[in-house]
Length: 260
Image (cartoon, rainbow, N blue to C red; front, top):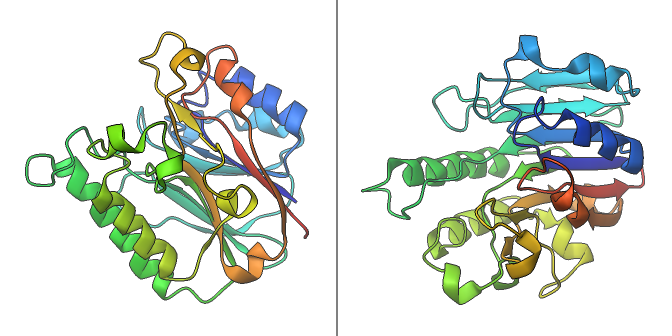
């Protein structure tokens, strides 16, 4: 089973490249973040035309939004409010083999890494803390994936020194993500297959006219698994080339293949 996570940054605006990716990579399940569309306007018919008959969505007008699109049946649709303000940032399902699949879009956190002057940064840290509390009580085989908006390792960013005070790589965010990982001994599948300091960037800013020229990437997108599920993981791939497709997202897809 191939499972993909992709922050698509508007599923309707980028539907053409999503369809292209599905035809070329042929994943069994696609987890999307930042769909930016209410449920009634989600382009489910386009996915069903490609054989993805199971479409579970948690949308919001213009902002946020997550979805899980699948060729295999899905059950137990959960939507956790880790943001504590009803933003559409999580959707979870159970796969036919009993494994839980949780798709999450962690808040970006604004520009200033100080919760006193930037409430968005505090909301981000609180979001991760709520995830940690959920994780600590988790007692079933689970895959946790999505846009975590945190690049934890020095090799997860183009310059560790330059980004130590930049939101997404600050020590306080890294420590929060470490606590989440340790709360249930999550296996970071990206680094399981590509140990640091291997290149594994998944995001490049739109601010650069040519993202390939300065190549200032960060690894913001992750796929984790509880230890029992991680044993079934066979490969992990980052589709960096998608960043150069027509009307690209600033994120690229990541995919893990499991032996189940």
